[in-house]
Amino acid sequence: MTALFQSWGLSFEWAWGLATLAGILAIAVPLLVAVAMSIYFDRKIWAAMALRRGPNVVGPWGLLQSFADGLKVFLQETIIPSAANKGLFLLAPIITFAVALMSWAVVPFNSGAVLADINVGLLYILAISSLGVYGVVMAGWSSNSKYPFFSAMRAAAQMISYEVSIGFILICVVLWAGSFNLNTIVMAQKGHGLGIVNAFAFNILLFPMWVMFLISSLAETARAPFDLTEAESELVAGYQTEYSSMSFAAYWLGEYANVLLMCALNATLFWGGWLPPLDWAPLYWIPGWIWLFAKIAFFFFVFSWVKATVPRYRYDQLMRLGWKVFLPTSLLFVVLISGYLMFTGHFA
Image (cartoon, rainbow, N blue to C red; front, side):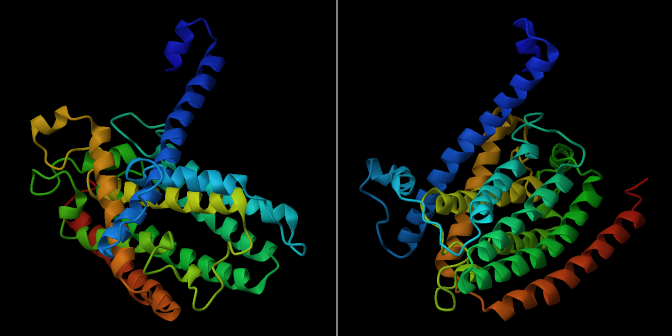
């Protein structure tokens, strides 16, 4: 795209800047629309599993319900508690929402179709996603209310606990692919399963890592059964209790953007990303981004399915699973996988 703008007579600096801006908009605008529609599909899936109808009034089949909700919160008054720290109170949702969008910069939608094809893409995602803790803690502390503060502490402990195990799980993927670059990781999965399936998850050593990654991604995004940050019976409504209007909506948008990111990472790291499910020539005629979106949609359905059917954990059970089960298990598999790769001469 930079070359295209240069052909219009622009200097390299201006052409590169416009190309980067166009790439950001090409990801951010569809992502925001996808977030709005994912809220709608989330509610439809829950309704279907509970034998209800879900949103069905605003627009055909209720498709415009999310946009109506967005307009409603946009027109509401922004109320800031009198005892709150105003600067941090307003900055917290901005951080959460911005961090949720920034992580998408390194996700490959097709071969070479990525905003920033950097060699440390996986490290970038780990670093950026961990910054989301700051938005949560700042929201609870700046509200100057004990219940949002309790929820923020819970959320911070939960996110940090499961990020540790996610880190060790990703080490296993990096060892097998030999790179932190997400495009390289996707290509390493070509024909990996039995020579015909494009997926690391068909590897007997990496399949348990995918199961743990899926569960950890539920906890990382505070989705059921790990939505302890919103346990109505124990807390008022979570760290965003004191928020209203668009500052409240920013948390919702950030949460669903993170959910879609985790779905994309499940697809990219373990299920072939933009590659078709099978290493069969006719399947490559379908554009890669369609395969990726289909896999993201499937994992989003799994997230909604779990939320609609699995009861909520207690907080002690949540922390026990993270520190006493997932952490030692992921460490064990790092040793097993690295030992196997050394024994088979993979690194040679």
